[in-house]
Image (cartoon, rainbow, N blue to C red):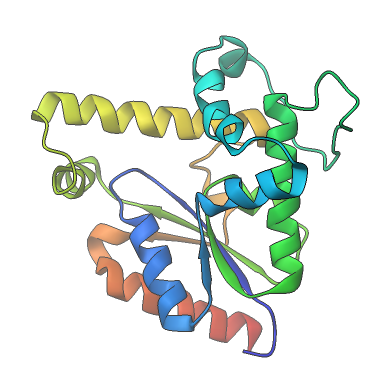
Length: 207
């Protein structure tokens, strides 16, 4: 692949979006990035990786996360600032890595508001993977052995956090189809066909 192409994937829990992203990367012979972004951001910033992992939990527990926005503007807070290890700056460094990857290689990036961070990049295809609640329950049950009611709460809570996280850093609604180039219902297509449809879209758009 001569042209560098980045596919960002946002996904509902249980829709198989992460699996589809992994399958896509493998089929295209390119790198797949998920939690590895935190490690790369830690190495770049010198900030302990554990702080990146804990940042989401901090946001979940604060009311500010639910009522305010901290929309990403592209800035980095310098080390001498008291806000250097703030949740905002931890996000900023992950965004820096995402932009760097988009310039340097073809890859698949899951989550982390990558579609918004790379919205001005011409070589980016943004995808949203979704599915009906019942299907997500079935898929999640394959990974988690918990009662149906607990699993349902877990799925709803996870998607609620993803929606709030996305809105906090982008000012946009997570499930709004206008944020993405391609929205796929994995329950109707299956994982393999979703991969094929994304590749078909890539071939048409990027020739």
